[in-house]
Length: 120
Image (cartoon, rainbow, N blue to C red; front, side, top):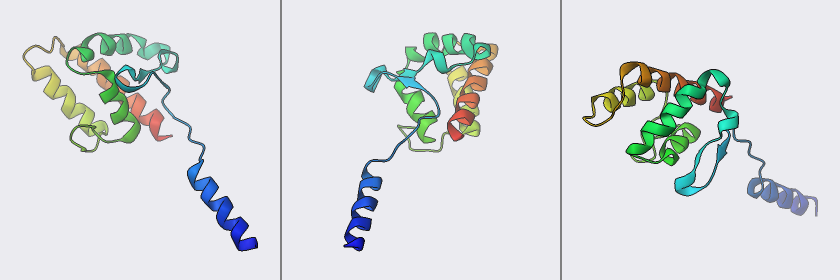
């Protein structure tokens, strides 16, 4: 009987686990985005910039998933600080990216902050 109860508890815990998202998000699917309230004041301008320019080519869902999982959703490659820098360089080189180096640097700093917060 004790074994049965222990197995039942173990199965229940494995199915119903409490998960706390480190980085707060809002929405679902293509509307998935970082929660504005979860962004510190010093990163708000970079967040607004990211909201304005990054969505010209892809939804924020892709960025949120990459930060939360540590993997780029399309390629499955690691999404870490080194990858953020590489993506930033790629985006700067795109013909119609509409980014300058200062703007991209601000977004890199924000994404690095979000990666750090998610790792806590």
